[in-house]
Amino acid sequence: MTKGVLGRQIVKNLLVFLVAMFILSFAVFFIASYAPGDPLQSFYGERVEQMSAEEHEAARHRLGLDGPVYVQYGHWLANAATGDFGLSFKYKEPAIDVIQAFIGNTLLLGGVSYLLVFLLATVLALCCAMYEGTKIDRAIAHVGTILYYLPGFWIGLVLLLIFNVNLGWLPGSGAYSPGHAGDILDRLEHIILPVIVMIIGHLWYYTYMIRNKLVEEARQDYVLLAKTKGLTRMQVAVRHCLKNTAPTIVSIMAISVNHILGGTYVVEAVFSYPGLGKLAIDSAKYHDYNLLMLIVLLTGAFIIFSGLLAQTINAWIDPRLKVKGGGTSWTIRQLFGR
Amino acid sequence: MDDTSAFRPVGKRAVEAVPVKHRRQPGAHGIPVISCLLLAIIVLGCVFAPVLANHDPTMFYLDHLNKAPDSAFYFGTDSLGRDIYSIIWYGGRISLTVGVLSMAIATAIGLLYGCISGMGTDTMDNVMMRTAELISSIPSILLMLLLLAILDSPSVVTLSIVIGVTQWMNLARMTRTEIRQIRSSDYILAARAMGATFPHILRHHLLPNVLSPLLFMIISLIGTAMTTEATLSFLGIGLPVEIVSWGTMLSLSSRALLTNSWWIICIPGFFLVATLTAITRVGHALRHHAVRSASNL
Image (cartoon, rainbow over all chains, first blue to last red; front, side):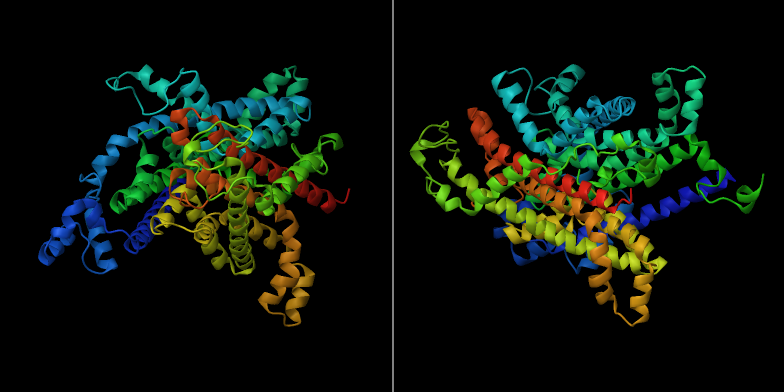
């Protein structure tokens, strides 16, 4: 029964995924086709003005820019199905190759921030829930709310001003020092400030969500039982409450993927970190639509995939979901039986 | 980042179980006097900008580039030679306008969308909510990037529209939840039985009833929109530098980092942060008030 439900869920999700990607790509394509700025200009630069009409036509054809929008989209879709996402107009390379050079940096920055945000959020939430209603709880709430509403790019600037310009402790731009591409310590040194900005911007939001769930959990009767058994407050909170909150945390982690990704965009721009976000902003500035589109699609795919993954993980760690295929409705026997 | 739904109180059952002394929401205590005062000072300062400014905001004082704060230039000058003290008030006008305008647009779309989805048939509701979910699953910065890519240099109005149309999804979802709760109430049934049309019910029954729980979210949308404006302008895809706003003032900060001019970064940032914090506190207080007045205890 559970296997069937899970299988059907995955098939359904895959269908949703495909439909979503289709709509997304069409929307981006449509918007891009009405955008100002001549992609030919960004591809050939000055040479466009010296081209004859035939050369112009040929160049358009080569870049897949001739015919009405839906024909162009058809071309693009047919090519995309074979893994060819067109040329980046700015870099004059296949868009997918350009992205490959940048995606690793973003994954490192995003991944480290993601893990640290949730590790710290869980610890802080536990701290809040243990001392609920006391000064500690309220102090964390106050500081957290203020930090949450600070604009991320501004925190980045202030940190750069302090730690890079004035103290000179940490590097302020790039993903690694010249000539140290393989040096993991050097790379980590470069992501310290970006990661701090990411943590400050995202930590409180998730702490608050997890805290609320833990607080709710702490009102359950089993907590009393566990305490009567002789467990300490800490043991009850970690072994029982936190364990029961795990599915919620996983769900929140799945929802948070797009926020964290969106956060890396801004942070990368502040710290001139060569990642997907900087690439996306540059490609929007230079009307490099093939590249922008691929970034949007990749981001969308990544987000939908993480949602799917979270559902699967939850079905696996939370036995409560297996009982009724995820539903909470009771059968008549459950309601009236003994 | 733009999702404020986490700041709702936890489930109803849990709230009831909480002992009375624990029932205060973190960060919400009575009327926030300091925040109201701060907000009033900033708004009035922006309204009376010509009175407060002691230099011409459109003037480039080219022999005073990057000057630290002194008695002539209270907040110093930026790398274009503009007097920061004078342009901060003019910039505030633009920032606040974008904030309020985007909030109005997002609220209008969100409320209407949520009401239609909440009152509609199940299929309609499903389709509309899935669509909203799909849009909100894309990072909003990416959406705005796409929309801004097709506008060559956005004006205050177009930027507000771009921000507004990318921020309404959460509000729509919450409106829909609220509407679902009251849609089968007797008074709505009675209104329908008397032949009231959807616009009439919307105006006289639905909106007045859902507005107060959503007030916090609507107010915090102003703050979100102001942050977004600043971020986009800083990234160089929002307002052009000629239009003075707190965001475009901060867009000069990468140059300021090279010359170590802290005042170019800190002063507009401080104004932005002060406004955001004050708005949020006021919103929290309003929500707290709404929650208290809805309770029968």
